[in-house]
Image (tube, rainbow, N blue to C red):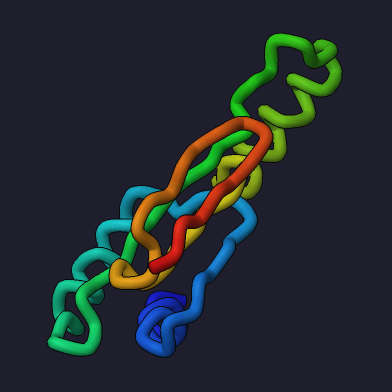
Length: 102
């Protein structure tokens, strides 16, 4: 997956992943990115948007989320990855994702 992300961001594509990367995956991605930095590829930006607002959920829905997270090991939400030279700023808002492009 890391090779795919590096390849696509080098092509100036933005990747949206359902769920979030775990700490090991994110560290490996950062390491691979650092190894690939050159004049044409200055790096990537990563934003994790989690749907952690569980206050208004029923007990049944909270239990279901807990079980899914334990089984799959991934948190709900989105991970947005893009080339640093294109993505100037990623604003985090519970209702919107705004990517500001150069």
